[in-house]
Image 1 (cartoon, rainbow, N blue to C red):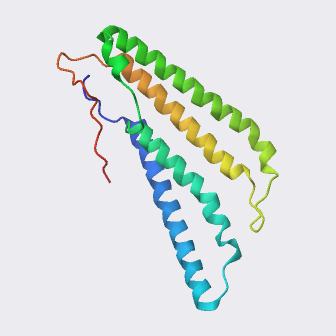
Image 2: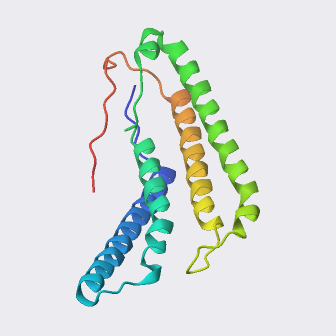
Image 3: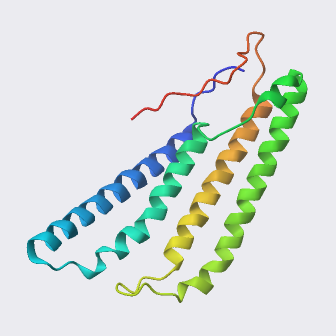
Length: 175
């Protein structure tokens, strides 16, 4: 398959997820270090210091999952697709990505419907609503649906080259 340059959607999703990764990791690190130093220096700790990392960790995980999906870094078995002729491979890939997009969209909608229910659940100390974590999951599923739709578009519009590698090429991580 011909190489495809990342489009504006890819770049925007990656930037958003990288910002979420850096912010959540940095805040979690600073809070845990400060709380540890405070605990050893004074014998006390910040009561809220356990809640904030618990609330930020799902955002860190979802951002990483979306970036991994974007770069094709999840586990995949490709031997069945490689056995198909190029025309069939194109159709199967497009239909497969559309099914994946529909499933992620279904999860996003189901999570959205639960937001009102879990909004009443509050964290013990900061009294933050439980919908924050569910919003994270909903956002991640919506982004994954968007990326799957984009993959379906690419699968349909990418023409196979004569010299297609037998093994898929996984792009190197870049910072």
